[in-house]
Image (cartoon, rainbow over all chains, first blue to last red; front, side, top):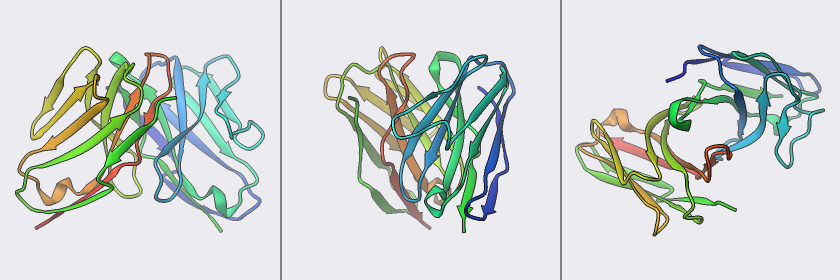
Length: 113
Length: 112
């Protein structure tokens, strides 16, 4: 299994500001995934981050709003830019382990006021 | 396009009951299916992973089955406990390099 640490675990932010979420994995992985879970909803994939290349964004998500960095094989960051109350969600980092079993961090609970 | 649904959306049972959560997917070409548990405001904990070549997986009081032909998976929880109260999500992927598609989840409440 993979152990994933996310920081911060929660934050309350003012609208118009940005928040950077960190994700650290205890082993080297090729791909890291970022998800959003809006209140009362299931998970939606934001983007896939590969080390050494630009992240691949899903339909409805753009790099200007959700820039991602992937400086090495164990670390990634997701920034939520120019936040509005609609960005209030849980943001989760995920990696695939053996047999493509998905593992998740504990999530970042973001509230935008 | 793979879509995943879960029934029921919410379930409340007395402690000690056995229960079944259902998951359906539209595309039978599924690579694997995974069941997760999510506590309120928290991340996801992987419970069971079933590969397409497998019919079921067991872990403690949990048993998950997969029927590709009917597009269904079930999660059986034996002798439920209040600590089992959480949201249970199923998720599948079409190939090893496809993204994971999540169902909407079943919110379970086990009453002492």
